[in-house]
Amino acid sequence: MGRNDGSERQVSAPGVDDATAVILHVDMDAFFAEVELLDRPEVRGKPAVVAHASGRSVVTSATYEARRFGVRSAMPLSQALRLCPGAIVLEPHHEKYREYSARVMKIFAEVTPLVEQLSIDEAFLDVSGARRLLGSPARIGERLRERVRDETGLPCSIGAAATKFVAKLASGRAKPDGMLVIPEGQTLAFLHPLPVGALWGVGVSTQESLTRLGLRTVGDLAATPLATLSKAVGQASGGKLHDLANGIDPRPVTTESREKSVGHEVTFEHDVTDAEALRRELLRLSTQTAARLRRSSLTGRTVSLKLRFADFRTVTRSRTLAEPTSVGRRIYEEVVAAYDALQLQGVPIRLIGVRVEQIEPDGGSSLALWDQDEGWRDAERTIDQVSARFGRDVLGPASLVKKAGRRVGETSAVSPGLFSGPRDG
Image (cartoon, rainbow, N blue to C red; front, side):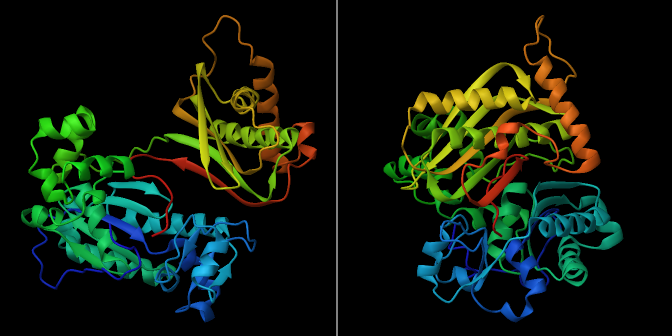
């Protein structure tokens, strides 16, 4: 939906009827870039990207000045610099992003207890119970934007609507640094002119299927009989898309956040072809992922391997376990088996990643009569205790003393739900 560079910005006029728009979606604008600009005020107003200073790095975030040149998050830095040769490269500092995220979420929680954090830089708020004390939803939204700016120095955009989905669309249209209110009675007027790609769940393949039916706008989709839509994209997807296109989204704002996946991935400075070096990297990523699961008292049943080749082609392979695990050795053995099955000897690898899905709370012990991971589980818990006392990397697998190659960009992610994914507001 749109170019995401602010060129299609739309904000509400004063006095808009906001009585029904009690769901707010607050999204920080170019969050990582804006945090970096707090320490680099001389860069403000200039095209800049957040990335490691390497030709193999990818863009984590970009200022709106850079976006107008076509720069986007997840784009290779080399491509971004070709599009915008004058862009200033800012080194990322993830600890600062976590700090500012916590400060912003604390402000939200002081407005309403009904806060559903979606990612490090966005959240839904239900302000229906705050109106008597704090005023109308629009007034609450404007005050929130003022507080975030005054207390953190960061801009944010807000969408206000009667449903979560429309509120999220509205915040995207209000960027940067704006607010758009969609009264319940104007929901369809707002939705129906939008391209079908604006609907959650419409990826490239689904959009192609809809286009073949002549469905190019949300209004086209809303007017299509459900049976016809279900035949084109499947019954489950058809029903969800038909509801969204007609403004139907009964999901409440929920304060309970359950992680959907946990993982780590890394991009190499130079393509790696050495299979043993790649296996060591898989061990390191598996160890980190498992430690993160244990810190949150979680286990996972599906283990996924992600590989990106020199030509940017990406493959994933998943394996489902009989028992959920948080044991790094078990995760490692599964992803190595998936890697070996691909028979990629000598194939250059640009990026490698490990992810655990089907997350659930740790039940405390295996239900199997013979727990083949018991020894590894005890050893890794001991490592957890040593790390908590003396710091990370004090104790770990001996094979990790060797490195797969210089790493220029490493990311870790905990995916919380429906609107998760790469963030670059």
